[in-house]
Image 1: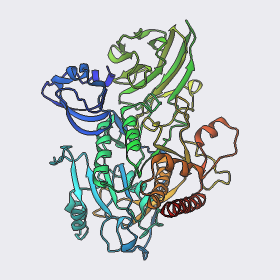
Image 2: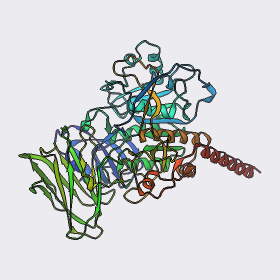
Image 3: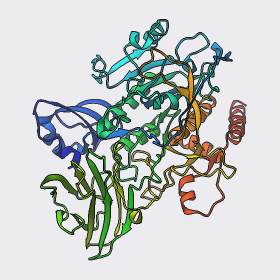
Image 4: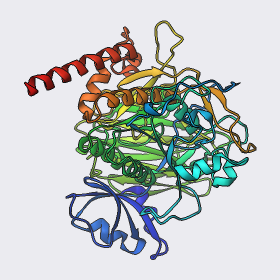
Length: 578
């Protein structure tokens, strides 16, 4: 059973749970399960806790997962510089409205910023679903508040549009830095009224605000994996038959990194089935996070890994270790004096005791059903007073020996591996490893060598596929800045931020341009067209190679390839007609 699922088995039997579930057959469902959204064999569903074990054991069920926290891909050392720019004349016209929908799941969308208004000063947002809103709605999802284009336009003509609508995108922005979602959206889809016009500046926008909260010790954490999948469902339902590009600048550290989380399988299923669709993801800013360790353990061998904790860390901490299912690896948690605080043999769960009480648990699972790898999950309720623990691995039965360990993100007090134990490869974000989604790394556009940014995560995936696939500008990117908590509406400012979150929306806007010309293009053709326009970096450095994928995007080359493909399509149609 999934470790997080074990944590929610006990409780009020009548409480409704939100889960992700993988079916053995996409048309056969377990009993007592209400399906909310479905992408082939992956569903989000509602069940009563009393039915959890029967659904887990149901013959129709292949895998069940509890909600997993999904943080934003925020780079904590990004440079914030703000500019106030007078509104300029826009070249936007009615005839220019794109038929390609731009979807985004993030947090904090300032609908009052002029960069999201059309030529008539009306909103380009068709819908904003604010998932954390306490107001319930009558949609199938049953939570949050969905704001319509009409409601947003009414609010725009008031002196206090946030209050009128009932949605303040910067409610948690006490420092006036600007919300993540507004800036990301501005890079991809600015109308050009304040900042430079974006390539998706004519696209209608459908946004899902997963909300900032103090989950996992961070006001930058988003919702969870269930709400993410239902956000994807919402965007595609609203888009209807129109082509659609969705940007996801979010993710964490921990997963199997083979593209086999239920979120990644669902995203892949979307892209397999729905033509005219692309899902673009930021690869993450984890290259220097010191949160990945990898190694080869031999038969009867021992590996010791130092786990270091932040002095101010008051939040839970977590490590996941993934290894091949033919192997058997034991794990012990020790303090610096060598005292064993917890031990787990394959495949037995165990508690961890330190500082005089039980403070953690080790889950040990055989052959997780989606990745087929063995999975060790160590969860601590608090950091140890010593601020150092030793994770000792023992090679009990070894055929392969490869293992990977990840420390989960914790934005208020990140724990880390000791420097000597760090492996900076395989650091792509937790939900960015699906075969058909496009993962984007950041490069320094001010650098003549176009070097990847120091923080930008490196591939490959653990099953050795190329991720990220492409690099885009990610250094001090200027785009829309949202109003702070204390402002009634946007001041139409711009701000500069750095990160792979700033690179991803640029590639997403290029995908919009492709689908404007080829609205039914499948994801395989789109990926080929996009990657063919990349310029490989001339480097023998392993880290640079693993960060850069197919290379730096060349928009001019992409335009040339689009033109060539249009001619091919026209010639093909002419030949067919004759």
